[in-house]
Length: 121
Image (spheres, rainbow, N blue to C red):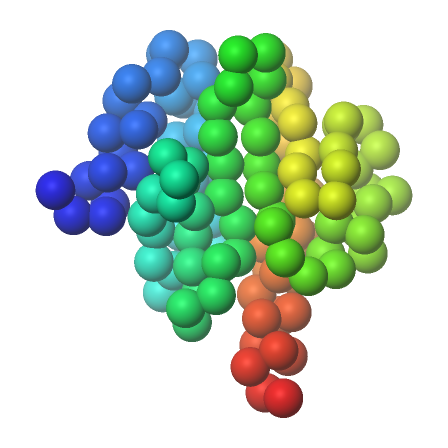
């Protein structure tokens, strides 16, 4: 099984509402970062850009998670996430209240820009 198939298998094991929301999130990430490499990292789908971990997502018992595990993006855009429970590395959301596409776009593109700046140093 290749890395993309592992991510798809992960999604296929979710309940239908979670699968739908996280599949849409996955599609949006892949459309924003067309050369992203997706793979499971410790059982969690993550997207890598130029070998650096960019973003990821996961289903948990009581919520869904969107991860940005490194850098300053979460701190820099904290005010934009005020409607969601969040920490230094994760935004928690539900199938009934997914993260708006515009916010996902802003977070993903900010993380890609951050990775580009790191690699230019």
